[in-house]
Length: 391
Ligand code: LMR
Image (cartoon, rainbow, N blue to C red; front, side, top):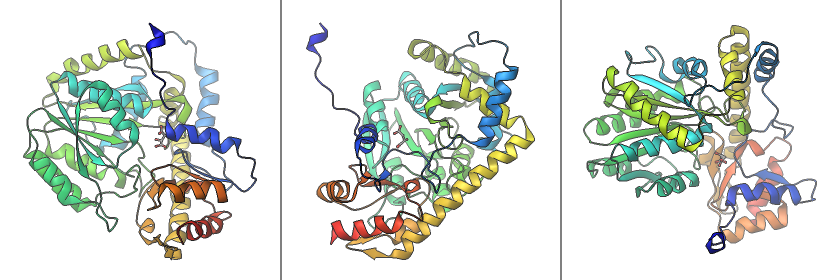
């Protein structure tokens, strides 16, 4: 039976990790998968997380199973950061832990599907795994252009997609630090999107995977909170991969905002049973470390400091790229106002291959670069390479 299976291509983004590792050139640059890097090119464990892990080793007295909802102390500790004042919206918001942001997106789409959603409205481009998950669960994808050719978010396109929606539609929006473009909606645009959603039958799903890496924890939740204030119900997929640096520990959460507080347990019981059938319960360690950070003032302050430093470094890289202006045929100026780890370069497949082969610079085949892979030490080489391949 198993011999009937077709060969599947490796995930293009994850395959880049291996290609990069196998390249012997000392001055190679990794702009592929989305991990934050320091000025030295490393991805160290956050100091706040290390300290919490030490505490965990001393304090944890059992590794017996929790339930499919995971560590609820972790789930609740994040809520004031995500939802602000009145984080439960009078008992209408509750959550559960998931294996990473991917687990949260998977659960959100599955819950929408189980509730009767037939189509998912998604901006293009989007994180490639979004489409993969949506198709795997069996929803039809309806696309709209995320950005205009001038490199700003296309408000008309998303509003038109919302206006043309029908019952049974859900929409997947990036809360901040859009992956792959770095192009976010402005606060005014979010207000308009929230207003449009309030007049539609759409179930919103907001994917918030980079909170704190754009303009700050509060600022990066503006869009999410604007939408939640306008709509009766929503699903929120959250990731701690980047803002706590917990990538391989797989730490995420799914939150549900129900129309009424008495519905929340029933809705989440469906999340629990889907989780049980998929992964039974999420891995504990990373979430427990986040809980310990957020329950300790000193560690929380340390975490804020580390996030601030990451953001400042990425701004410095973006400022230098913007200052370079047009190199070859590529205008780097818009990268200065984009947010988070990613931006897109308008390079052809051949030019992207030339970046890799001639210059040892690894970037996604879509033209996406990980801004954090650039440092003050390698950025001039990168700018020269863009000029060279696009000349
Ligand atoms: C990325 O887009 O590079 C990250 O979100 C990692 C991943 O899982 O794709």
